[in-house]
Amino acid sequence: MSSEWSFRFAEKTFLQVLEERGRSLLQQLQGAADNISDTEMAVGAWEAFDAFKERILKHSGNKTDPGAELEPALESGQPMPGCFYFKVGGWRAYYHLDESELVCSGIYICHDDDDQEEALSIVLEDARKTMSPDKPRGAG
Amino acid sequence: MRDRKTDHSTIIGDVVGEPVTLNRKGNALTVSLRKSLRGKLSADRRGYGANLDFGGVSCVLVAPGHIAKAEEETSEEDTVHIRVLRISARKYIVELEENDDEFDMTERSTDNNISKVLHAIDEKRREGSLDFADRDVLEDALSRLDDEGEGIVSEARKRLHEPSVK
Image (cartoon, rainbow over all chains, first blue to last red; front, side, top):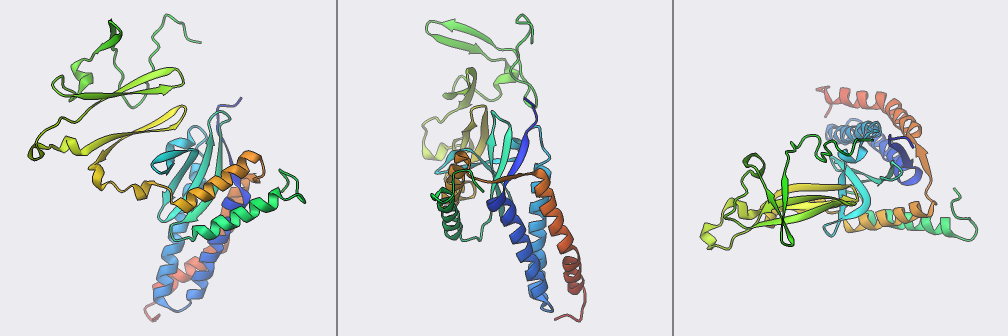
């Protein structure tokens, strides 16, 4: 078995969110038009997001010890097994580390201002669809 | 594989490891610590120990503890805590938290709803019903965003530097 870590990223809750949120920020930049205050805020928000995605890219290049760059995700003061994250500005990227298989999985991206209840309902709804009798387990 | 007769040091890296002699004393094990290793640990003060077990390899952490004293004598040392978190079978985090009463766990604790989301996602991952893409797809996604944003961001920055814009 290779001693290097491999990386993978959840399509819906990591990659898709990353792209959608990036595009949304770009739309805000365009929408700010001639309003200087809105433009300043939109540029600042984009720069924070830009730093976040640069960090994601850099982290995915650390094949020797990706866990060293991450903090454990705590739940009631206790670590959630295998769950880690890093924070850049208000952005958080969550990962699952499988130390036996040396697989680092990007699983979730969110911002401090996000409505997590809405995110939860989307994830649960998606899980229900996946588990429905019409769709076998493991299918797209 | 290493020769069994050679040194089997388990401390390599940023922390300097030094030889330590262990002695049996009845059912207990005593350790003699040289001055360079014991730092500010003192025989006059109570200490606490924790066994950091790395799946059969033991590493014992010894830290100074509290001494009951009058409130006015409380020293700075009494307001710090060494927090030890086991984050996996092979990894611990040992860190100093100053003034535990004021330590803001909210910064470190995962928001309740985020943890619910993470549990839901993790359940899907364990079931094998979560779709993953590899690093190339991430690079493509980020590259697309950079391409789309290039003109828009530079235009916005230009607007910020135009004095006529209100």
